Length: 406
Image (cartoon, rainbow, N blue to C red; front, side, top):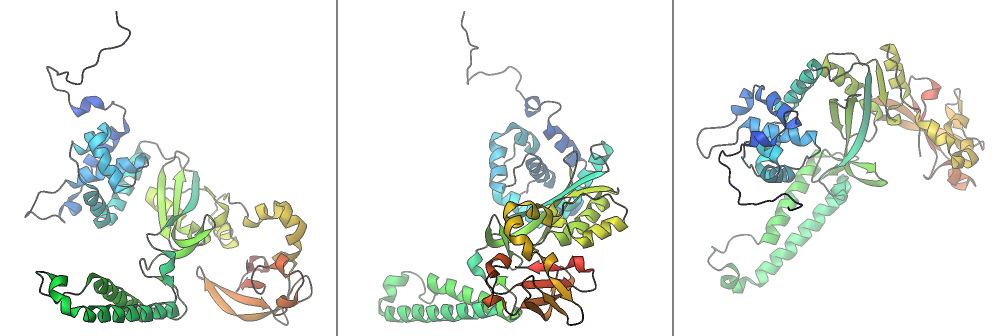
């Protein structure tokens, strides 16, 4: 008697198997299938026309996307591959195999509708008792934009780049003129008046840069590839990024999300909380958030709403470090004295920081004070890495709301 079960790839069955038999009754794919079959996709279906090749049904594509999201697969290419190899995806797609472009285009063209279906899923989760009202966890992460940091410039930078591109175009035109005598060899059966590929790309680049310069002011920096992306520090590196926020219940159900191009988390806390409560029609009375959301404005607003908020103080962890205690504590903002009569700050070494103007960040206005004697200060490196120490004092707020920019 053999030790192993026999196997045969050529084995046939009297009664053919169905995909339904490969998916367990309690499998997540069955839940996704049942939920999306109940969606009204009329608004999406109206976008399709009758002429031409028949399209994949929106419900099929929604099932692929939602199931992929639920198991951590976001890429259109990976989702397309799974439809050819994974029985759960085969079950949801009914053995249809849309390519990655179809999946990505569907997601891009129906983003608003997909958001509304997301809310429908939340309501179903609520009805199933999967969302417990009370604790809400809020955090953010930086996600790279599909753009190069080298393409983020101010107006002067783009004007310099435009001059370089125009010079390159002149060089290409000169090259074309020099080889004009060999036209038949170069163009073959073509008419001979087409622009060389190098010149085409440079002309397109020139047009994009020129158009962007017209839209820009002198101070703002914009990325040529992705105008919405901003240079944000992530993992110690500054690159074009987006700041993505999410609210998650204790049952790990995402109830709200927000994408911004603001490097600071603090300005989005109330927005994400409001969205979570609007989506679920419930009050979350004990929000828990990362220290990046910890500002006096947020503490006060949440206290005004009667919520028990759990957000660490941003400065607390920093103050516990040995390096901070040994060297930097002396130059903490709390040790800078504000002279209201003269409207100046006095540093721990007795040097003056004078008023230099105003700034606006996250819809909040600040008075900016700058050190005028920092260059000759022996302890400058302990106080700031910038050329001069800068203190920002929020207008109309208590002195403890003053903020620093090093």
